[in-house]
Amino acid sequence: MAGGNVAQAGNETEVLCLGETMSLVAPAAPVPLEEAPAFTLSAGGAESNVAVHLASLGHHVRWASRLGDDPLGRRVAASLAAAGVDTGLVEMRSEAPTGVYFKDPGPDGTRVHYYRAGSAASTMDHDFLADDVIDDARVLHISGITPALSEGCDRLIRRLLTRPRRAPLSFDVNHRPALWSARQAAPVLAELAQLADVVFVGLDEAATLWGVRTADDVRELLDSPVTVVVKDGAEAAYALGERRTVVPAPTVEVVEPVGAGDAFAAGFLSGVLRGEDDERCLRRGHLLAAHSLRSTEDHTAPPDAESLARWLALDEERWGALRFDGSE
Image (cartoon, rainbow, N blue to C red; front, side, top):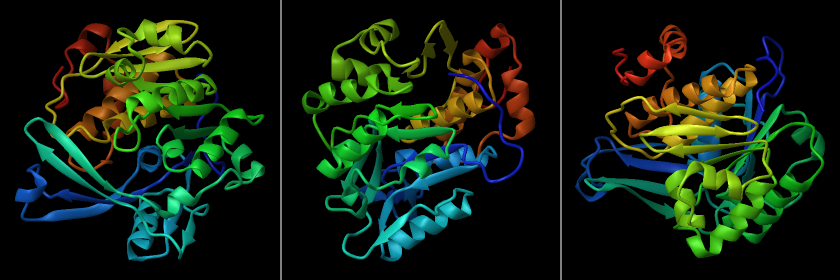
């Protein structure tokens, strides 16, 4: 999928991200929700997380969705705009609220509690975006969360995946058990992923959904996309297309894992926009994910440009010894 150059000027839409964003309430420190004395209020959503990460890397990104015309919705829109994301396609709805979710860190991982039923985003339908708006972007990024929100959202995602398109379509499987069970989701997400150009999926996620064991099993199952990117947790990530590329993950002391997959997708897509090969795209994904893993926020500042360039240029041996703190 790699190809093209990053826009140096003008208002070209490099990536259009579509999906629900909610208000995110998280403990200020990584402690269980019921014990936390203080909280942060921010915005969180898989596709807008990708948009924020890409914007922080200097890309022109638009985010399309619906929000409630309420204080939380206006705050979400303002926070994404302040992060450099173009929110001109966002619709505010007075008849439906902005969704909310809570992070609940614990010794066995972070649980997430959603309050999103009947949200403004769930009212999106197949005609939500005009064709010329979609075709204006160099990459369209969506996820498997959206079709689980409502029948209308499912129709919208199917339209985006099946319409004639001028630009590659990126699809993050992103199974959310709180929205639908693995049994319900598995055939639908496999069908949708087969229609995309680039697919992101975690190996553990794929195992739960489809009973596969290896990255190559995933590629055998999803044989239609140009590239299937399989993330194997702290071990490695694979880009499986015409060639098979594997890049080990750097060592990271994890603070909180939610959102790291979105950071990885943004890093990979940034490499794609820069015309880089799959190895370098995977490295960019790992580096952004590493920064995300060190924060309770869904999106954090990327590595500084100098460090990023230095890490990307490491030979295989030094990359394999890389820790998040930069020791090589």
